[in-house]
Image (tube, rainbow, N blue to C red; front, side):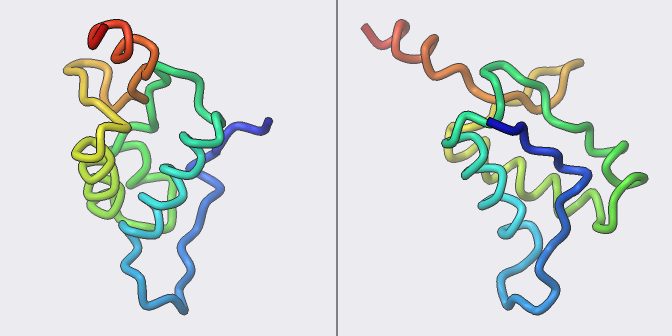
Length: 93
């Protein structure tokens, strides 16, 4: 399965859904489809602000929503990472 490339994603400018929610939905779907390996670090916010068509604030909002949903975690010095569901299952048992 092809990995998700955030640098190739662009928002649907005609949609009434805000850009950060569009991005959150796309990343969430990619995680659910296994297009990100567990513990993958996502693109850094500063780098995205330079190399993309949308503001880094949209990305930050999307990442933070995914953190609240338990799909991402923030690790100081590493950034936002995909949550390893296997580790969570082991901890709960």
